[in-house]
Image (tube, rainbow, N blue to C red):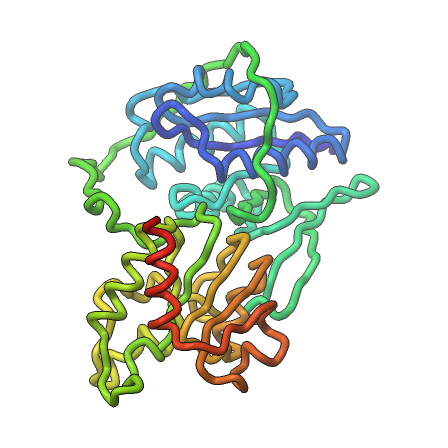
Length: 340
């Protein structure tokens, strides 16, 4: 049976987000490699207008669920819309971005359709008519290439794994797909946002700043200075717009009865038990460069570290540059330079 590739995206504020554009690039490459038709399916109010912004991607058909009822993320409505779009497209391969909305529903949609799903896919390949995906296993230590015979095959790509699709806009005619979501029990009453500047996790930032447990240890004067440490870190984040990461040892300090940084949570944790970010550059401070922490830096292009210990793990080939210095003094000077 000939394949049909469906690019699936939800529309937020009338636009297709960056993770979806990355998935679109993967879908375009997949359809080209297979010589298969590409269908674009968009969900949410303003879908028809959002389609024009990516109209130059070469999709043969455009499908839209353009309804206010599908503007908010709910399992019932999102799953119904995705199900309807896959059936309307006759898709055998579905490519979507690993956003919180799609990650929650697409495996279930694949089960409804009698197919299968793979999530956290960084790369898709099409060679000699065969499709394969790349997956990481065992804490990103093993890279596997796998294929599946089941169809439809829903492939959910990891954001940050490739460059976003870039192309001209074009006028397109989107076919409206009627969807019956059934009874909806979830009601969205509003959105709560952090106060301006309070967010510390910024996936699109150019720099990942990682703080280790050394920030809360006793310093040269024999005292710990967690308040000063938090002030230095927050000032740097505000002036550089970097994203904040943490080693596991730092976020676990509360269990040891030690003072913790109020700005730090387990959501900031980077490593084999945390996130695996993809920022262009990374700066580790007061970290010893342990393997569980460093494995989270696998996709960081340039690694630098600040540590007083010249024999720490960062010095053993894990950092491009190691500054043997006091992180408190270094970051105070960096903040001073950034202020000017």
